[in-house]
Picture 1 (cartoon, rainbow, N blue to C red):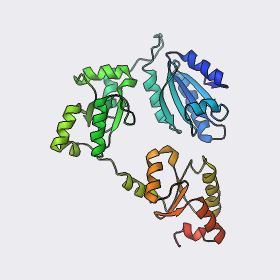
Picture 2 (cartoon, rainbow, N blue to C red):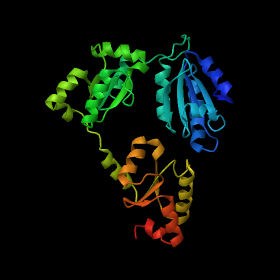
Picture 3 (cartoon, helix red, strand yellow):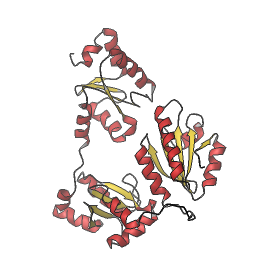
Picture 4 (cartoon, rainbow, N blue to C red):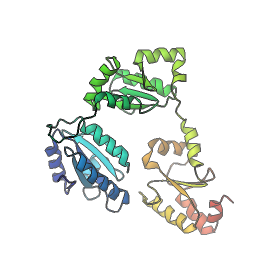
Length: 326
């Protein structure tokens, strides 16, 4: 029976990369002290049963720092996807449904010999219907919003960003079946392709026309501004801590110290992991005019970082400050 393999050294990891060749290789960078990692190892153990053509590997991030540094692993769990020894995708955090979805998507693009007991493949038209309905505004493009891989895709992204349009995207370069199938399905030969509520709108030229007429802005949902999002987040709980990691697992010494102080104070609080959201991580520094983390907020007001919390504790004012009585 197939099992999750374990990379015990740099050389072993490189051998596994070579062995996988054209098949999909999924590597879990994990740490034994992180409970989320153990949970995701269990998820991989289930996935290996239903994806026999995929190689699943555990790699202890801190035990093989050369590999972790090469691939810029800054937190665990992190999953990297490889094909032909090349990294093709990355997933940060313990997101079991998303891991499953990406494994299925990338595995479907792996050439494997058919076996008599292999499960029937999902009909491409059924799959395409699901994909174009993933979000109200769905863009099929070359690359990602962070890294567009063609000029037309880049231009359409600029229009979306200009009007703060909320959308999801699919990289057609990551899936040849979708890339070719969608051309026939939609009777539209080029990319990018924009769908709204499951209906094809068109490519860049049509999006430009809709923008010029003012229709695009009314057809697509607007993304919440970063400032509004930050205001909503800092008011999400009476006491909220923006930190590296979460209540269960701090990912830096300052965050760990502030958690200990808050836990001893006996006041309820929530946390937000700024490592999970780069937009919040950078935006909150400017919004609050406070350059470092952790940051503690009470009733939407910034209290400060670790040094301020330590001072409040030493002066005996911490509990009243956490209750918003200062």
